[in-house]
Length: 228
Image (cartoon, rainbow, N blue to C red; front, side):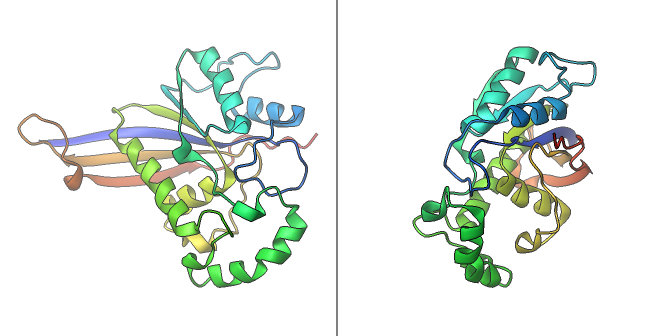
C-alpha cells in the first residue's frame, strides 16, 4: 500500500547576540534585547511574549543547545506546552581557532580558504575546528531524522545561520558552496514542507530505503527583520 505523509518545518535562526561583529560558532553569547524582539516577532509573540492568533501550533521544538537558540526555544516551549529537544546535531560549525574572531580579521585570514571552497567544498577547514564536509554530513543527518516524524507534524527548529546555509540550498538544489546570495539575517524564519512517500510492507511501517522524499520551500525570511 502506498503511504504518504507531510511534515512542515519552520527553521529559525537565532536573533542578534551580544558581542558585536564577531564570528560565532561554539562561543555562547546571550541574545541582546533586540535579538529577543526579533525572535518574538518571528514567532508572532506579542509584546508580553505571549502567543498570538498568528503563532504556529508547533507539535515539536528542536534547538541547538547554545543559549542564543535554546533560551528562546524554552520560552516558546513554556507558551505552547511542548518540550524542547536540545540536540548538538543542530549546532553551528565549529570554527576552531577562528571562533570569536572579529569578522573583518576573519575575512582576511579565511579569504584563501573561501576562494578554494567555491571550487571544492573540502577546502573549508577551520584550524582546530570542524571541516565543512563533516559539518554538512552532520546537518543533513539531523535533517533526515525529521522524515521519521508522524504525518501532520509541524516542527520548529531554532538554530544558526550556517546550518540554514546547508539545509536551504539542499532543499533548493543549489550548490552548497554557492549559497552566498541567500540572505539569512538574524531571526530569519523559513518554512519547508517535506513529503515522504514509500511502500508499506506487511503492516510493519515504512521501509526507509524505499522512501521517496521531496521538499519544498514555502517561504524564506517570512518575518520582517527589525532594525531598531
